[in-house]
Length: 203
Image 1 (cartoon, rainbow, N blue to C red):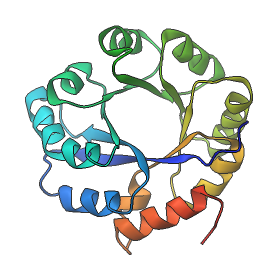
Image 2: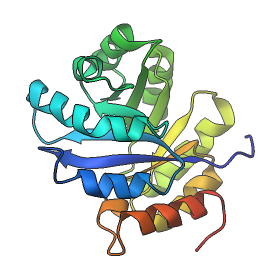
Image 3: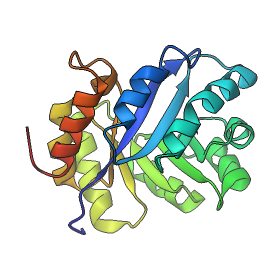
């Protein structure tokens, strides 16, 4: 494993509109050095979701943050995102790769097993992200993946305290969602602490 600090990957809550969330996102992005942003949607209406992306993506992209959307390559293409994050390693991933690669990013998430991750990599995913329902299993799989494969591995930290073990395991990117948006100190403080932990600096 290369001795390079993982970078931060932020994910929004499931959003029904952009206006209420934009201030928190801008506060988080102002701290700097966020690699990627995953925009999640509360509903399935593609036009509404495109509006959310158009409202939120430019502020992130202006800071060189890659913006991905959940599930829908069509929304990514029409709304000017940088890619899509697809659940699993099956047909949806294959179709997303066909539509988006190599110009756009395609990530594979919710991968339950080692075999799922290898299948996702073989399908052309630009990164793999294991399920984090079992934290011990997640750490074991991140260590295994980092030692054997070049495709980047994203790992979700449920809390800020989860970051250091994921860094030690060899994750290339650490995804944070609720741990940032629900932090009583505000998103900026949470992101600042996360970035220190990613660099091994602790609190």
